[in-house]
Image (cartoon, rainbow over the protein chains, first blue to last red):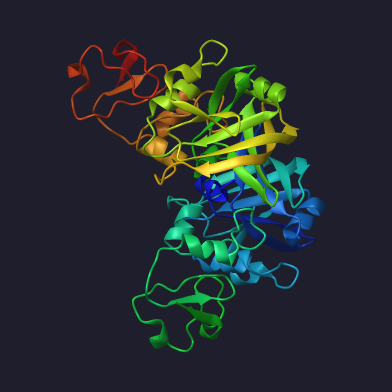
Amino acid sequence: MNSNAFRNISYGVYVISTWDNERPTGCIANSSMQITSDPATIAVSINHANFTNQCIEKSGRFAVSILAETSDPSIIGTFGFQSGKDVNKFDSVNYEVKGDMPIVTEACAYITCEVVNKMETDTHTVFLGKVQDADVLSQESPMTYSYYHKVIRGKSPKNAPTYIPDEKQEETMEETKEAKYVCSVCGYVYSGDIPFEELPEDYTCPICGKPKSVFVKQV
Amino acid sequence: MNSNAFRNISYGVYVISTWDNERPTGCIANSSMQITSDPATIAVSINHANFTNQCIEKSGRFAVSILAETSDPSIIGTFGFQSGKDVNKFDSVNYEVKGDMPIVTEACAYITCEVVNKMETDTHTVFLGKVQDADVLSQESPMTYSYYHKVIRGKSPKNAPTYIPDEKQEETMEETKEAKYVCSVCGYVYSGDIPFEELPEDYTCPICGKPKSVFVKQV
């Protein structure tokens, strides 16, 4: 079996949010799809290890904020590379409450759902949500996972089904003889025009916001 | 609720195939996603009205052929706009048997699965498949639904969750004062350089293969 085949499945990049009692929380997911059109239902797949999973279980509700190509990649760092158990993720992004659910303002569209069914697997729960509210927020193109991977040069959080361990990921990168600077927290590969060494000391990773010092040199 | 929000979810274009006893059959789906990575599982959503649904129920197996941007759009016509009850869809495409399943040769990758769980909805079954075999067949870019819609100018089959009835679809089209020629079978909008009237009489729709005569003029 060649698991590289899975990388040909197309995904978007979504913030799946819900309430932890009265506090908004959420995580990043690539796995969201519409299942039926009338009534409209949406399935999302969330790892058991994500705090968001147990919060959706309790609240019985979730929202999908569909990120755009123009959305700030730090939203992915905030929601994808930290746990809502430890931090209030919504403190560092602009959000609004729509259809009684917390929605990332920079999304190009949102969908709010009430959980009507679920399917368990070894590591993930597939929640089926009946759509309660939905709207388009901007005309920006939705961010695809391929865009995130190729243009923003981000990778998958460890809990994502699309996660590829480091040693395998290396094989898929373009060959280059120059040294790469890689964020050791989220895996972002620096690709700016200024040589990495010349960046100011207060430079932070555009994905996860961690300081310049967590970057490691790879040859 | 503004259902245009759903159009911001990203999808690929897949042939979901299986066996009808010893005959290969299948249909087009946009809704496929990886759910877990170890063991690898894939979920696909298939309308109850698709003959493929009952064949997957019986055989307990399905395959996902991931179409590429370069795949012949007539594959979508063959699998998306006809029923496997009436025709042998695999008669008109090149296919191979991989991992004991029929695979479209022009796909850029394939995944074969054994059904291990399912979730029922009003109109669709979400089948969860444990991956048996998978491979990459070419380095072509996978076709996204957005590419199919915007570049090939195709639309969704009636049984797809992404289907938008004609009157709604019209609102989303670019404004143009020129007449459009639309295939009345699959909805393909002719966009070639030669004026439609001047096309040879044996011109056929590149999506569903139906003759020039089924095209209707829309202003």
